[in-house]
Length: 534
Image 1 (spheres, rainbow, N blue to C red):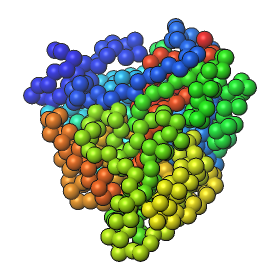
Image 2 (cartoon, helix red, strand yellow; image 1 turned 90 degrees about the vertical axis):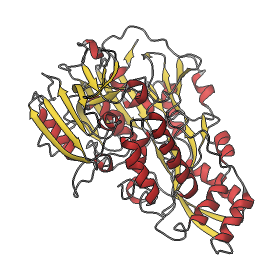
Image 3 (tube, rainbow, N blue to C red; image 1 turned 120 degrees about the vertical axis):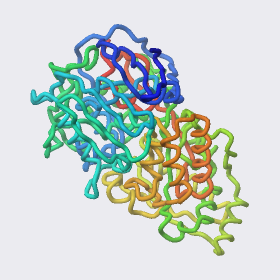
């Protein structure tokens, strides 16, 4: 059987020999169909070459987007500090590799029915939690069921809305049944907010998982300290003896900490000074195109944003090219008011790019029945994850003024922004890591009623296409559906999506790495497990 072999019993492929273990059967849509536009690693001056991994050393990360309300319950986590820690403390059933393909992790392999509604996962044997408890199907069923039900508070609840049943066929086999076929279902199980916990866990801030590192201490908003798990089941991973993840929201402070040697790696370095920073002797830079993007969600259920002409006026009043030049220093791409990146496989390249047009903005203000438009826009230093949202909205205010639109900037504190402002204020700034599949990003943020639908927007045609495209195995038909969904968001969506940012990291030349993933920042949030010291 070839690696990609579609037969009458299901859609299957043979997975690579991951982690030096035997080759296993992994069923999903064909690997070719699943592959997306992988972010390309761009080596900047001083970038270290990969060498043979070795054990030892202490890794210190300086990470933006830290908050005092952080949690190690990844179902509820929203910030990057716990996000990168998730890849160290926990494992998922599925991992996305550096080529943006789903590969087995805690699952040894999987099979899907021909209609992609029933998925059966064979679990790895002998995997232990940090407590010494052996992982079984009971743990998987417990963990995945936390995303389901009316009382679930999981950020991934919408992604599991189609799951009708999760059962343990035996201690080493889990079967998942979907109401509708989903060719991308393995991607859902790879999400960092869907790790596997021990059944019955109640105190998630103990950080007990099956991952390559054990929790030493957790100070929300300050630091997470880890030590290597001596009994880790993965071969060739988890090389550092110790890891410290420090929350450093201020960009200048992160740069200074790296230059002075207080940390080894920083995320979201200042894009205006990135080239100069990584040209510093002893430092290196990594840039990868991915799916991360910035948004300005407008609550479509709240006046005046419940009027699409108001939303269109604001979309035309923003100079995206200016934002790309000034805020990202060219390290990214302009957005077109939908969340699908040029790196995604079904990106609608044929959709006309929205550009700054004050006259069209004025037209839509009049179409909304208004003589003038004044709105408040909330932003904080960390609400664009390292890029300056405050500077961005100041640029927006100036360009909107040319269209006669008055934008009042509301500067919000970084601490508590995601609990007090986001999903609460009617017009704010936000950012997203992005997702490997179109279905995942649409289901999480744009499906009607989704917990993280930040614009509270809904559209019947969009919702219908969401379900149709998810189960469609014909790639050409599926692309047509996703292009139409991007067009709907472009024309009526509740979010301004002006920019896609490349993933930037800066590090000293003591750290080493292989091919860096672009699906999420920090090497797909797996940096702690994948990198090592020279």
